[in-house]
Length: 359
Length: 176
Image (cartoon, rainbow over all chains, first blue to last red; front, side, top):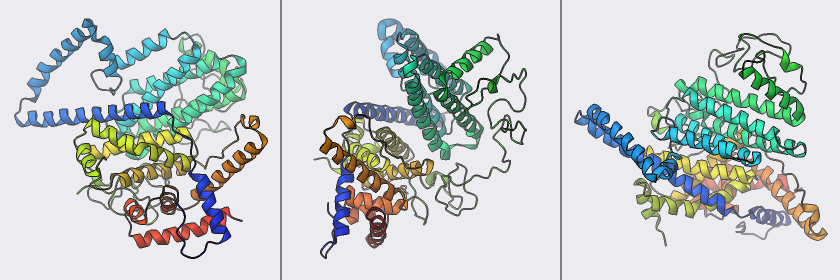
C-alpha cells in the first residue's frame, strides 16, 4: 500500500515509498518448515489440552476424596497396558507418542531411549550431528516448558543436554579438515540460537529454578567458548576433547577447559581436586586472581539486583524497557506476567505493548 | 470463508482443527513480518514457533484473545521481535557467495535491493517498539489505522502521531 499523503508527494516521500516496496519482498517460507511448525504447534496444543483434562479430572477426584486410590489403581493398569501395547507391535505408536512428552511424563523415558537408539544406529557422522543437534533443540523445548510451568528442571535433563552438546562438538570435530570449521560455525549458530531462546524464557523463571537456569546459561556460554576456540584452531579443541574424555574415564588429571583459548597450555593447568574456581560460574579472572562469586552459585551479586533485560521482578517499578519481570504494583501476578512476554491490560510508556488478558 | 468468531470459539476448546486453521491463516504473515524485521529465516521461524507457543499458554491461562485474533498474534510476535532486538545487535547481512554467478545487471539490482532492505531494517531497528510496529503494520503489512490501533491498544489519534514521528525519523535516516 502507498503512504496516504493528501498533498502531492515530494521526491523524498516517493523514494521512501519505493524503499518500503523493496522491503516488502521476502523469500517464500519453506513448505517443510511450515509443515513441521504446524505439526509441532498441534502437538503442543494436544499436550496442553491433555494436561488441562487431567488437571480437571484431578480436581474432580479430589472433591470426592478418591484421588489416592484411583491413582494407585490406574498406574499399574496403565503401565501394563502400555507394555502390552508395545509387545503387540504398537511400539512404534508408543515411541511416536513419546516424542511429545516432557520430563516427568510417563513416556519421557521412552523418548530418551528412542533418541539413544537412533543416535547409536546412525552411520554417517554428519547425519548424526544433525540429529544430535535436533535432540538438543528438544532439550531446550523441555527446559522452556518446565520454566513455563514453573516445574523443577531435573538434573538428568541438564546432564543430557550438556552431554548431547558435547557429543555434537565431537562430531563436528570429526568432520574432514576442510569442513570442520564450517561444521563448527554452523554448530555455533545453532547453540547461539538455543542460548537466545533460553534467555527468552528467563522472565518466566521461578525462584526455585533460578540457580538451575543460571547454571544452564553458564554451561552454554562455556560450550560456546569451546566452539569458538575450535573455530580458531580445531586441532587444539580436538586435543582438549580427547583429554576431557580421558579425564572422564579416570586416565588423566581433571582439568579445566578455558573458553576462547587457542593455546593448548592454558587448559592443561591441572586441578586435581575441585576448588571454588571450578564448575559453573565465572571462574578465575584472566590474571588468576579469585574474586567473590567464583565457583558454584549464582554469581557475584548477592543482592540479586538485575539489570534491565533481566528476569527477576522489577523492584523499582520504573517500567524500564528491558524488564521482563512482573510488575509488582499489580495484585494479580498471573494476569501480569511481564511487559514483553505475555499479554497485559495496560500500557506504560517505555514498555512493550502486549495483548490484554481476559477479565 | 472462516469467521473469526468461529475461530475464537474453537480455540478456547483447543479444537485441533480450528487451531490448525489459525496456524494456516496467520503463520505465513507472521513469518513474513518477522523475516522483514529480523532478516534471518531461522530467527523468523523461531519467532513463529514461540508466538504460537505463547498463544497456547495464554489460552491455557485463560488470557487468550476475546476479539481480533490477528492483532493479538501480531502483538505477541512483535514483543518477541522487540526482545530479540534487545538481545542482539541488528544483523548485518552479508552477500552470498553465489551472487557473482548472476549476470552483471541482475547482480547490481540484487545488491541494491538487499542494501535497500538492510537500510530500512536498520532504520526500523532504531525506532521505538511502538513506532516500529506502527510503520510495519501500516505501510508494510498494509493494515488500516483502526486495525493498528487495535493491535497496539491505543486510540487512532495516537497511532497517527506515532506514524508521523516515525516516518519523519525514517526519512531522515534512509534518504540523504
